[in-house]
Amino acid sequence: MKLNRFVACVAAFLFLAGSASAQQLRFDDVVRNLRNPDPKLRLSAVRLLRDAKYPESIAPMAPLVVDPVDEIQLEAIATELTFFLAEEVKGRRMIGFVVEKRNPAVAAGAFELGPIALWPRQVPPALVSSLLQAIDDDNAKVRLDATYALGVIARPPLAGNDQQRLIKALDHYDPAVRAAAARVIGRLQVTAAADALTRAVNDSQADVRYAAMRALGSIKDVRAVQTLTDQFAYYRKGEGAWAALDALAHLAQPASAALFKERLADKDPLIRRAAAEGLGRLGDSSAIDDLVRDATTDESEMVRTAMAFALAKLGRNYVTRIVDSMDSPKMLGQAQDYLIELGPSILKDLYPRLHETEPSIRGGVAEVLGMIGGEAAIPALQPVTQDHDADVAAAAKRAIARIKSSN
Image (cartoon, rainbow, N blue to C red; front, side, top):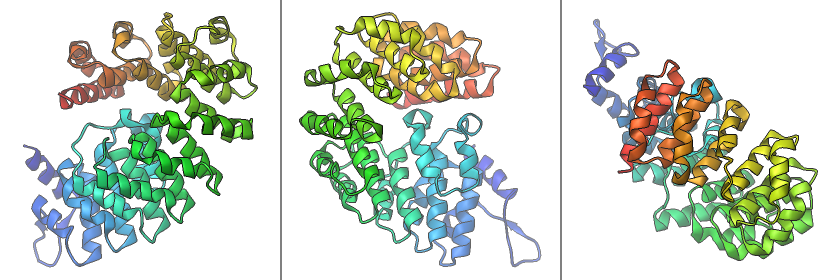
């Protein structure tokens, strides 16, 4: 029984004081202490529930996200994140180490990992509501962690009122919150934020402007094409130009084709990457010879993989090239994003790669299959749950759990 295992774990961590013979705390006592007027007991309860790794604590802990004590709020947010983050992230991407150190940047780091690094758990509406409320907290660390944690934990589509509360954060007095809100809006596909994001493109702070531009691409607001094109013409280079072109690449409208082709030879590899992605999504094969050449010769692995993605979108057999790049930790996330976008049509190319000698490829492919494979992928994933590499086996188990939870 889960409860018995939890109680056994609790016994190893904490005992009730105040009696000659200490009495072991039970799960229901720990949960009650989340409501204790003594902040020290509330904080101890959060830490115990976190160390016990008991996901049934997600809902009872949600009110502490808006606790009057900052330390408890930060601990509650970090703890809620651990219930959703996969443990395997510890060794591979260090986010587990960050969480264990209770670093205030944990939520932003978790957000960077993307949905593929999460366990498919139910999200209580009360937790979403508490995180939205904490965005207006007086403590800068709390409100920023709450914003990014929302982007990690919440699932689209947000309820209408929750959408409006998040959109409101685009006008927050804290520019860090405004930028984070724009990024979260893009992740959660809050299309109702289009007008507010367009206004944010002219924000006084550069980080907000860049995040707003990318979010417009993420929510697929095709009305923003001219605005983004103007922004690219204004910046011409640097992060502003990349943000604008990246958004245009996600919108992939015919009006941007000439700009994409022109920028395939840009000095900035991020610009070249965005240009290639845009041409692939647009289905424009007029630059296919350049894409084929640069998929092999470009000096940047990031760009070579983007060229391979564009060619795969154009119907060429380049999925294998994308998967090959997953042997590099810095390329894993980019390659997985491309494979997920390419979708179920590439499954036949992915199944054989579950038997690669490189563990990062086996695990990375397993994670992708969890996102796009459906029930048909379970027989291929099942043997991988016994992989001799613990991270690969856990990735396969998580992929199967994700598939089953979506049915």
